[in-house]
Length: 421
Image (cartoon, rainbow, N blue to C red; front, side):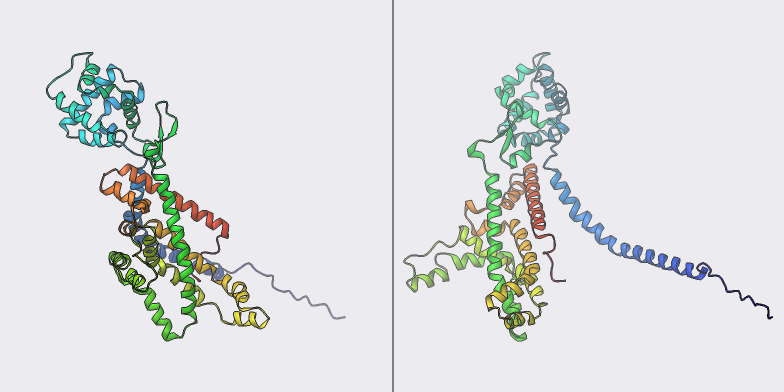
């Protein structure tokens, strides 16, 4: 009987060392690729951070940071924050602060800051500084000395303004940008009705921006559709017409609309000569002129994203819908229009956000009641040098824009804004 022969089969071994080395090399290569990519984009991020993010952050902090009084009048500011009273010790410290600030030529800076709260402080400080060069109040007579300079130094309204200006961080500018203020007890109240301005301006800005966005959608959608349906030759001509405004200065375009829409302009001349109107219409320096010019300027920003999306939609969809019995209008709104919503949404958001920030066009073509919030930001930055209020208005505008965009994203599910990629 033949003996059984046992054949041994090799047992499976663990992964060989060369395989493990290959995986490690792939990981190292991936990490090297990531590091090289980061090094390439790092200069761009550094440039954006240094010259874009930091200046904007510095501007926005001015909405709550107002250290002028505390830096130049540190003695009286400390007494206000610690004791909260306007006793003899406070006025003695205030006298010492005025003398030091007068020698450092910083009285005007504090006067401008206090004037932003309550008018008259600049004059009061200058009078006190001039008198402090000649007379020194006796011990215990500092309050009486300030009262002899100007009775407003002991007035409760002006003392409340000093209390608001003493801390380095304050909500004064933010409240003022919302037509609010704090009364003598520290409670929030509305400012006087004649001084309420900024809430109406914010609503006006949103109204104008929304109206311009709607007009751009109504005019831009047919134009983009026509560009897609046209032959290559006419498509290039239409695309050139859309891009042409980008090659013209904003001031030139705005000034051109002033000429076109004025009472002696070509539009009014044509209307009067054709007998459609008896007298020239007022088409400029009002809300109509603002809408016309902003729509003309911002229309390309809606047409181009919409055109890029429409160009990728196959024409077979419409033909298929019609072949299945759908009427042309029904086929358009069920088979074609939903596919263009990403481009329409992207263009509408772009137009809305850009129109919020325009101020040259409304300033040149609009009336006093047509100015948008960006005009007031520029006014308080360049004319009155009120950086605190300008920063507060800019911060409110940024918050409103972000809230509206987040609300839009939530409504649309976050999947409607794209450029067709």
